[in-house]
Length: 469
Ligand SMILES: Cc1cc2nc3c(=O)[nH]c(=O)nc-3n(C[C@H](O)[C@H](O)[C@H](O)COP(=O)(O)O)c2cc1C
Image (tube, rainbow, N blue to C red; front, side):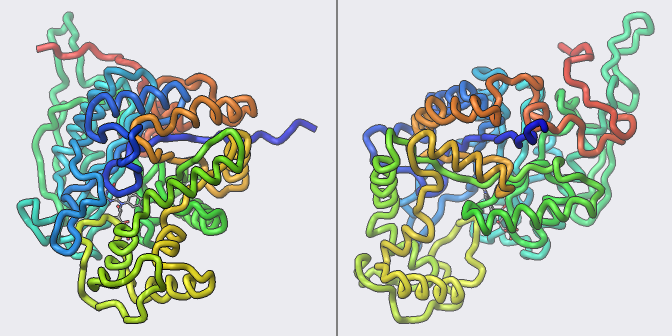
């Protein structure tokens, strides 16, 4: 009997830079914002034949107790500009940008992604996030303008509108027909969208890139977020990297696809994860412990606790027990965090329970709930764990976030990737094509009808003459 076909492990990399997930004080850490750092990490993971390179987004520097939250990596360039630069120094690697659907406008965002897809010859992806907090909103012209309940209705209409804009150029609209003298189709770029959130019409300037639509990524966890993923996304990021919770999330999101006439393969689930690799399991465990303690300093431990308790806890000993007092209801000590703790009283209760059960100090507790590395061990151990996780439907792969920038994935690419390749679960070259959809096994656009009927393959080359004027 032939051996069952194994699932492929999809790998992506994120250059950290929003939250305190890197050990920036390590002498090997370099700039989080210099172009050399972006290039170095992107080229490393392209050597490892990863699917894509990913950038998160934070639109306001976070504040803690009214001050800049200096435990973060502060300062961050704009994603599409960075990825456009990377398009010139990579050839196959997908380029994924987080861009918020609350604080932007569809025309502008659709134009920027169509441009990136063109510049990169079909490698663009858009992580459609819905953070809506008023604190971040103050940076934008309408400030505190979006009730939580509206964030996904706006995001869905935002995406629909962007798709209308990309589809406003039919295939072949750029004619350049010398015989007839017709350069461009009469209806090129014409659009009109009338909706609750957007009421716009006109002509869209930018013909879409080779993918037609960029790959759509979603990263919310709520019920509304999962439905949005099932109806519209092609990749989901999650924070679930504990296998039991991850499998439940995986089952739940894949199950929802049928409602929208989609198959489980139309959506890949990629939790964020980190890997600590050393010669032996023991050395890796010791190094992972060191990293956790670097990431969660005594000061960071107290700040994390204050974010949940909404109180000044600076008088508490980080190496002592958790505070006996209750969280404050309305106080938001930490402002600008993209993932809100919705029920802080419940979080505090769970943390106390865990700390009592395991006899953990404040710092140990904060390490336990957020500061642990996902895969720790020798190259063989890490490859086994990643492969096992994917084959048992905990995920379709991972977005790896290194704890050091920019060299933090060198060991993974040099030592773990070859083992995955030997097993036949990770490509040793980009055989399936040159676009990101090719790497992800997403050969057709999510709305193929707009391109001339169901199942019509997307154009993969530059089949039109370009307007060089
Ligand atoms: C894994 C993951 C990554 C995220 N990355 C970002 C980000 O880079 N920028 C951002 O503004 N929001 C980010 N978010 C926040 C989500 O877009 C969303 O606003 C938030 O999770 C609330 O939605 P929910 O209630 O559906 O979970 C992320 C969420 C998750 C789960």
